[in-house]
Amino acid sequence: MKKLFPVIIILLIVLSSSLSAQLKIGYVDSETIMQKLPDAQDARQKLDNMVSGWRTELIKMQSELKNKQADFEKKNLIMSEKIKKEKKDELLKLTRSIDLFRTRKFGTRGELYLKQDQLMKPIQNKVFTAIKEVAKDEDLDFVFDRTSDVTLLFAKEKYDITNLVLEKLKLE
Image (cartoon, rainbow, N blue to C red; front, side):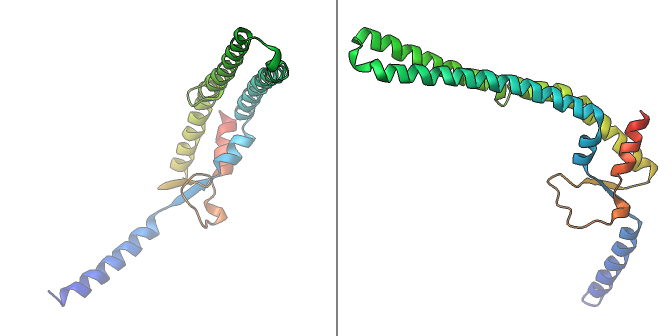
């Protein structure tokens, strides 16, 4: 058994090196694809315009709150308790309204998230389909995304299929 162990190890090394020689690997830079793809640029522009309008509205609401708080602080000493309570309630209501607006627009399931999903999902599906087609055309076993969480420390330029994917997307 002890004599057989080194033979098995050598056999595994030889087999693994011959198998790895047959693997074909490619990678894409999805960030570059999304930057160059007109559909993605249009979607990004729509989202940016929407967010810009919401930010303007949010700044306006925050400014109103700040002005009302400053006014309350100035007149606090001369207000009756009843008016103080009304003003505090009004400030609290406005603060809650701002928080609710922020959550509805920018929260984890807010309008921005939903709209981004609605606009970008079809584009991402189109890109993934093109990547799959290029991978099949090039007979690749694996395709990695250079911009994802998978760390790609080094890759030869010849394995970059980003331009092939962009060409495939232009044909559609």
